[in-house]
Image 1 (cartoon, rainbow, N blue to C red):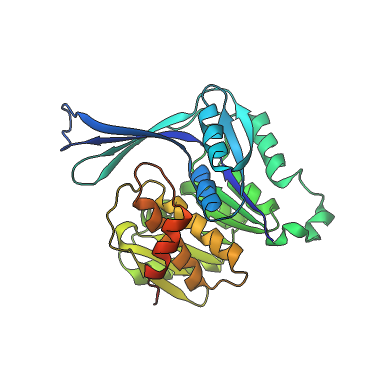
Image 2: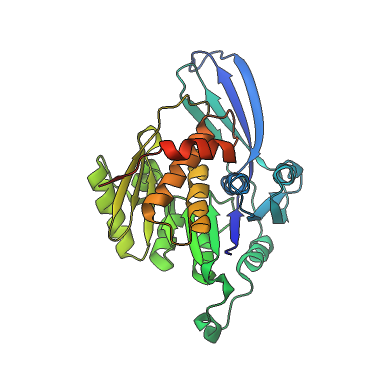
Length: 321
């Protein structure tokens, strides 16, 4: 059975604030609040654990208030092995108004030193192998490494690319900007999962239709990426391989929060790969959409549970493009 390692470089405390009509430059009274320990990789781990998998969460945690992160993982029974850094866990504010729209105010994250960065690399992939060892395929061959989220200050832009290069199993990468471009150019991961905004902004393109998204995804596949899953928010998601492309429309739901939806999609993809040894792309997309749907119907940064996932799965439609 494959192992799942999830790397979370930039943990956070998510504050969800609800207000009435948003007044720019004026007084906005908060009607309700919720705080959740989070981070993209942490969210993925919690969703995977709820779906019945046993991931290991690695990454950075901060000494000042990092206990909130480990307590959250302990609450769900998620194994973790962090490298500690000086400073405090960043705070992200998710501001919801009566329209249902969310405005985000995200801190960058405290700086991490070179020693901590090297420690995390060793924890994740071991020491750099000798050239002849690169030819060996070990039990890691079918293991999954999930790299998800932003980098705190001090972490080099090619850090994800380094991990992609040295991991000998499958890598799922969910990030944006130069970190994504560098990984694709130097060590293409098995699967990437940007949302449409991230895809367009990272590569400086406009992709107004499903056809343009699929065609651009195919250019990334030609560089070595095997699968591309593009989340489209309220529209649904696309899944592209070398030979096939699929679209899944979003379900009609009462949406209570949207943060964590993309992380739930990643968890759904991993779940499909793990629970179905020869999962088809259509099955992977279906599981991703079910996990996301079961997440957005919960308040705050609360990930899907198994009951919600099972309820959503038969409702998800997947169409061949």
